[in-house]
Length: 313
Image (cartoon, rainbow, N blue to C red; front, side, top):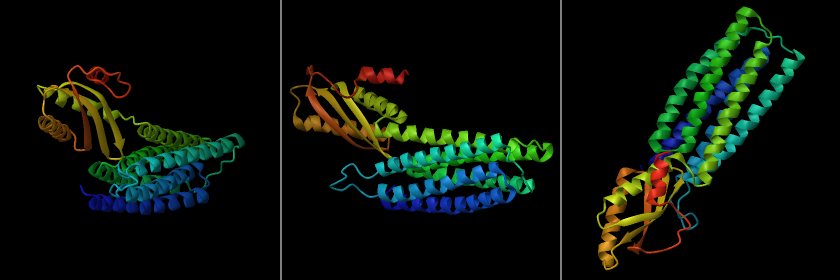
């Protein structure tokens, strides 16, 4: 998919998400103040963070879809990782605020909820709307292979659980009149918000540190294709790095010492093509050629043995 089409899809889905979440957040916060329900108010603040998340992915999408230039030869895809990192910190802070305010209300017993039925209705609307939005954002994220949009979609999936918890809890409160249910639900919502923020924080941290679960498969694909070549030996110093939706691979390979440069280049081109065919996200592969039995102290990268150990984990 070219940069222009990818950016259009990313922008459209982000704008839809921003508008929908803005309407939901306003509705929930207004109902929260109107009914004095901390649970729906917490859900509203959670939805408000989704506006920021979608806005950040919108900006990051425009930046990351720029083609490589002289200052960014690998491309601009790390903008999505930065956006995910910023959003995760905002989500964690929002969870902390909800937790503190809910705990204060629980301790001080400041709970007089009015017109609970409005809270139930809004929570029900939120569950349905969030589910539709989650499915839509997830499909777009997978289509353009955007980690930031996928992370945003997964955050919305958690919002479905959050709104469902509010719906069930307030429904029970409506019939039982148990006063402490509202702040207790809000505290539960705060932990869900914490969990979402922490998971996104760790995922973005792993990408910054050149670590990702999907890279294990990349390493395995490289070794499988390298070992298919009859004249090639000892694929080693294999390193893969992830830049947004793109992956770059470096590796060393041993070939016969008397082989011509032309023949060695043909073998490398064939290996590169075969590896890319196994994974379309791999955009470039640099292969360093060495003669059989070349003895070097390898400080970086993985060997075939290391990669097979990774596969067994």
